Length: 308
Image 1: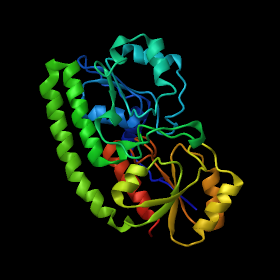
Image 2: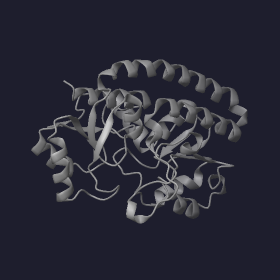
Image 3: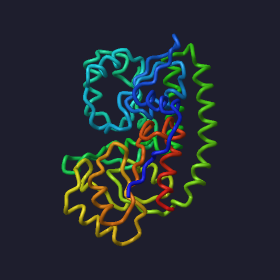
Image 4: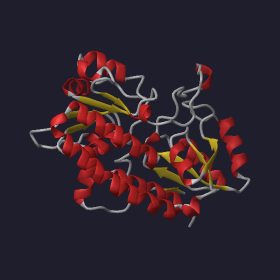
């Protein structure tokens, strides 16, 4: 049994989802050109810089680790005043190539128009050293920090300072947008926490550590990984070991992100009678996730659906 979001939405909401996923553009003449590496940062930029022209290099249906430096991306980066990325080496396989080929000096240094969200907070799971035998791990910590609402608010504050640095004439507007976003975001956090209280202590099996911040925040425990090592597809022997773990009867669900392969999860679900929850990894990961607020709403609602 797979649980995902199939509810019907208005055409307007679907259009907004597509806009955030493929590139948000405001037609105002004034404003910065912003290149977002992931749709969650396109959405955050939209909250803080409503007059900016914002382009998202990836969608929630793509693995942000693996992106091709296409000519269209190079052209967008060449036009950018600001590049916003997760950091912690999430984009290490493709961002340097875009920076080199775009020949845009503005977005080569964090002293200027390059912004890494992971550098604004303390990341989870930092490692002193890594090697290839460990799989696809990040020495600088888990880069999927946008699912921690408190850390994301710190990122929003730092990003506002960067916007003011690059566009001081619009300082008042950026600061006003931050106040508006912060008030709405801080009001939403206790609502989410109260709604998700029933999830505390639940155990899940999931891919990689994509939702580590979400699980850490809400009190869930990922007891096993569908991958034998990060970035390595599950083998038959590894899946067999997961089946033995699932038979202990204390697992809530198998969780995968919107861009991750369902094959291993489906194999395990068929034999364990566990539900597979397809959570949106970012804005645009399902029909419900049209902005950062509804991204959280959707992820929590899907997790709760397994409790029913």
